[in-house]
Image 1 (cartoon, rainbow over the protein chains, first blue to last red):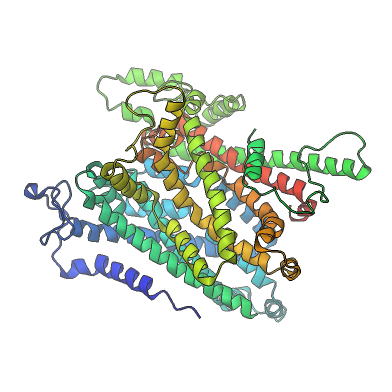
Image 2 (spheres, each protein chain N blue to C red):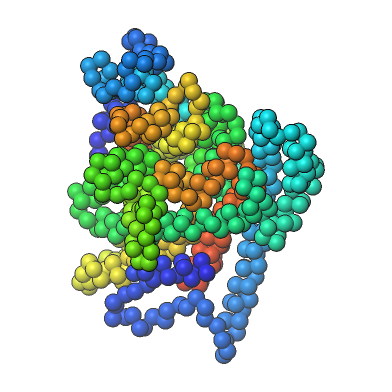
Amino acid sequence: MRRPPYISLVLIGGIFVLSFLLPLFADLDPYTLNAGSILEAPSAEHIIGTDRLGRDLFARVVYGGQISLIIGVGSAVIASLIGLILGVSAGYFGRDFDRLFVIVVDLFLTFPTFFLLLALASYMSASTLILILVISLTGWMGTSRLIRAESHRIAGQPFIKVARLAGVSKLKIIFKYFMPLLIPIFMVSFTFGVSGAILAESGLSYLGLGVTPPQMSWGSILSEGKSVMEIAWWVSFFPGLMIFLVTFSLIQISDYFQELSNRKESYK
Amino acid sequence: MILTMLIQLLRSSQLTRSNSPYHNLRRKPSLFRSGFGQSAATVWYNLFMLKLILLKIRYIVVMMLMISLISFLVIHAAPNSFFDASGLNPNITPEAIEHMKSVYGLDKPLAVQYWMWLSALVQFDFGLSFASGEKVIDAIGDRIGITLIMNFAAMVLIFILSLRLGVASAMASEREAGVIKQLSLLSYAMPSFYLALLLVMTLSFGLGWFPISGLESFEPKSGIAHYLDVAWHLVLPVGVMVFVGFGSLTLYIRSLTIDILKSDYIFFARAQGVDEKQLKQLYIYPNLKPFIITILGLSLPGLLGGSVILEQIFSIDGMGLLFYQSALSRDYPVIMGIMMIGAFLTLFGNIAADLILLRINPHYKKSL
């Protein structure tokens, strides 16, 4: 039995605590400009340096983390829910609904995703909510396909047929017998979705289409740093490192869930 | 032309070559086999293919219509059109803007605009760009080359690397497989722009090995030196693309290979004493072929997109950058043009993959 990915779990937990709890206790100021300390290298006073307006980079990375994580988790929740509902319905009801589902998913997959994302994000002034909606709108297809395939498999199992014959109501079948079996695969695609959404958000922010100043996310801080990367590597390095650590840990966790669900299958 | 490109790519990645002694016993299915002396079954089969192709064409047309309608509505429903933004310029009179709008037909109802755009599209006329006034098709034509070269190079490298690594990791010891898996996960999680920035910071600024951005050096070169120069400029962007892209494919090929290794014919071949190298050539690569073709079809639209961020970082004037700039300035004709080409490539890739698979293995018909 493989051990759960403790390091990744601790890392993710730590980053969440850092972003959401630390500001409550510590006195962090991500906004005040300070002309006396522009682009200072990491030191005791500014742990990871300052940006080109003299703002403390550590405070900015902490506050930026809030936005990045909210957008990542928010989009993944919405996308997974859409995927779950549509996928289960298509897998369970089959027939016409299934056919319609395939066409709609095909249609969404045919749009070049990043182009669509870019087009949508570029003409809506990006607030956190809009970004969440846009990213989830372009990211639900993968989950729903996985869930649909899995539901098809479950719907063909004998115990579901027996339950149907016994006259158990549809909702009860779905919630009592489908959902528990879908949990592993749902968790795989959810953790995967969070990291995908964080990558998408930081990509958009990198292109200047993410959250608008004075708000900040890891992507937008990194993007501000690229014009000064010759003289101040730390401005881009640390927010990028945070993005990477979060996505890498999430993928490790996702991989663990994947192995769990595979193992269950092989017991049958 | 793209079809032949696909086939050549397949040939180049050693998929169809085999050193097996049974090589000549199997008749190789040729893609363009036709001619006289066909049996009734062949005639029937060709009719079936014709019907299939017609169905697929109908599918493309319907999908393209739906996609064009949706993206047209979405894009035109957006606030702040191109000309509203130019209204901020005090040197442009409202009359001039009205005139411009009538030139582009923007004063007509949306339905009429859509019809005009669609009927022009049928003749491969994507309209004129608002920003530059040049034909959209020319604007795209100017930039498509470099994007295709970059993405094509990256795609070939990704496929070769993933095939090798994926198959190797499925057959390797647990320890080696673990290393390859972690590498793939690393590639999956690494944001392309972060990797690009790190590489530029260390290799370009720090060590001066590679140029920082652009496609050509400052002093112009000619002949072979010019191509070498461009290639040298493309090392970092293509390298980043390959590193970011190989992970998912490697994991996929690994899981496919593990399934193949469980089959009876592998067991039998091993019992006969076929060595690992022949096992790969004779049994593993050929059985991976259908999946590879499907993925190749799916990654066809990636030849165009997928490099917006990298083109922006390395300031390479390709399709990605064009789309980015047009999206920012709401240059509808260009946005729509690129979206349509991208969508068409997606559909075409799917269908080409389906048809090639059918040629290779007629049993595939059942799953169509």
